[in-house]
Length: 308
Image (cartoon, rainbow, N blue to C red; front, side, top):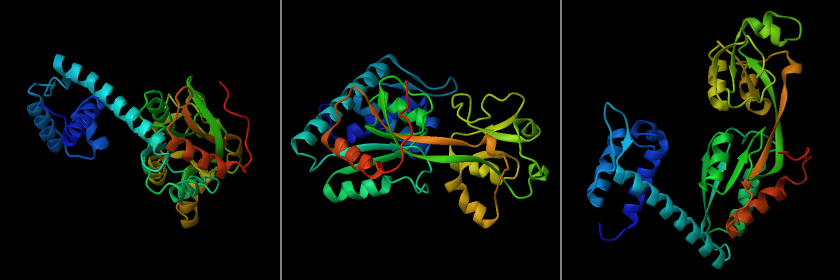
């Protein structure tokens, strides 16, 4: 391979994604490709480079010695490209370039969320700047920010990470929900953790101890999810009680397909923050988007900042 072209960079991105995912199967979702297509493109890359980058088979996915070196070079290349684009962005005074914005899931139905309005303002002022937007779990967004894989994040983090800056934007109330014929509704009094112990509950997982039930022992934890849509599917199956934001659950409540459980003491308020890397100087475009996001949310009541 004498010269690197745009096609080669795309193949190198594919290779890096496979490595970051831990194999071909795990990379299918991120790449939105069938495994056969991924395998074909990896063969193309190895042919272009004239070396074997990885072994895949019954023993699982593993990098060759050359593959590890190429992966490390990929990280340097991608970081240099990002730096180059950021410098160009500054020179052009936000007239071109692109931004990486990463959001936590299912906040569009929250009336306090003004992200759409901020994007509209930003795009009207900077129509040639492209926005690459992804949806990830808050913890993953934080890791992406620390690894330099995204510039601006909207997270709902209970425990702040060192090296990140958090600015409160809006919040949402999370309550327990179930289907209308769930046996928990036969309990007439206010539901406590003791009453919940006889019913399967969807929890957030060990790394997301954010609900009032997270430290409650003896609950029947047969399912967990950090994703609101996945949680909704589990609740609508009729088998589980689980937390959902009121604004998100309202569509099924209005249809008569979901009911709020009478458990006010188990409700909690989730806070959403504009999250950026504390030490990194952001591109002009990212700074302008942050300004727009902050501006449209600043009139809303703010709780105390997320403390470390």
